[in-house]
Amino acid sequence: MTRKLGRWLVTGLAVVALLGAPAAPQTAKKAAPAKKSEPAKKDTPAAAGLLDINTASEAELKALPGIGDAYSAKIIAGRPYRAKNQLAQKKIIPEATYEKIKDKIIAKQSAGKK
Image (cartoon, rainbow, N blue to C red; front, side, top):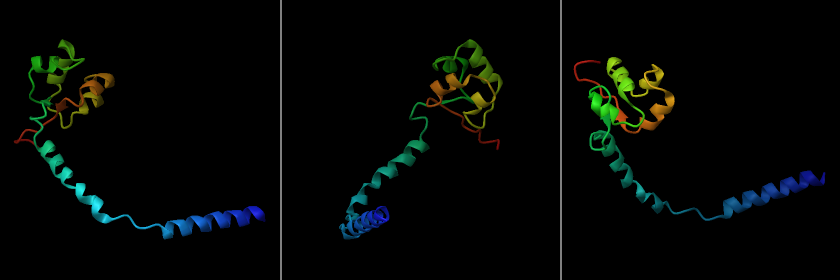
């Protein structure tokens, strides 16, 4: 019986403390302009130095970490890619190699195909 009373007492005190606390001012949300710069990064992937796996030359692909003659030839032979993760899904390159290069590549779609 005393445990039940103790739980009620603790719960009641917690509710009183939460209701009695002053509300935080809403002025802290003025940091939203930072989000406006994020879409600009997505609109300009070339500026970020991303390599398009659908159009990159063999030499450009070899410059990626873990990609040599064999993997660059397999990447070129498997084109076009709808998404960059297809390199690992289609077993063109191992998952570990994909993890090394995934932030450095992109799979752009050609304008004439859907």
